[in-house]
Length: 389
Ligand SMILES: Cc1ncc(COP(=O)(O)O)c(C=O)c1O
Image (cartoon, rainbow, N blue to C red; front, top):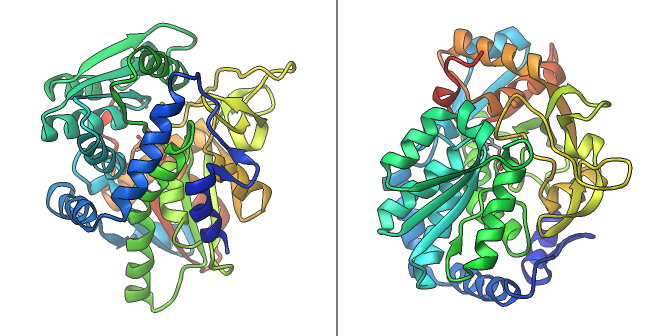
């Protein structure tokens, strides 16, 4: 009964041994308030009705579940794509930022802050800030700002301040550090966290707001095929689109679940973002979960061609699911992801985000010639990646 474990995490802050809230004292009461307000919002029909109506009329949900015929023929399986790339702002991130934006408004906050890697969460946060008339500052590593430049322009156009940091490798880990330290100094702002990571209650909040992906996909595949899929695939950076899809299938033992990690170029040599494959449990950025560490146990910088997967941590629920053997997490190397990025573009006329291309590449490998029925979560579209490969 794994969905029950997620319910109890909402109260306890722990997914099995993983999770918790390892934060400075100044933030502890803020996070307790947030957890209380989140629970109250979930039980408030008016809050949920507004959330659902915005998902429908503003985001454009439900997103289609599309039978990719040419990709299916190429792989030798029946493959459906869950089209999160068709959401307003081009990725799954908006499902979560809308929910958190509504929570921020409910809590009387005037300003949102966020970290971003690929820029999709930053764009989604800036969008929601504009929608609700809130101020917005987005923290981004300088390397990510360079490789995802179109999204920096979008955030600015939407009225957000974009603060880049040169610390570390200028990627997502450094952006989270910058956002967390701003939050510690200004606990009156609302931190709109972009993945199922960080201190309690964020992993539970993000899971809940992304679970719409799995709820829809489960209903849609039953309508179209009259049965559940044999397998589901999603990429895992911090793990929000993956848990959004997987959450609806956790109790269905017959549905195999696969998470594609950013393999980078060398998993053994740590030029990788394959946290669950190569990392160890440790406390990192507010919670206890797997993390890429050096020989002394200190967190190290991750590497992936994909800014959205380039993160040394992972959400605590994924750590639990890995240990339980319920989800298989496997690295997909940079070159495999680029090949899948091109292949999906040519075969289906769909240019995926490079993050999502990792899930496509893993599905190709695991389904080859099997004739099985599968869903791949297409977490975002590739506009931000044009001209890079
Ligand atoms: C399109 C897309 N997919 C996936 C991810 C990875 O994030 P998560 O693992 O939280 O879904 C990102 C992160 O920026 C993204 O932009």
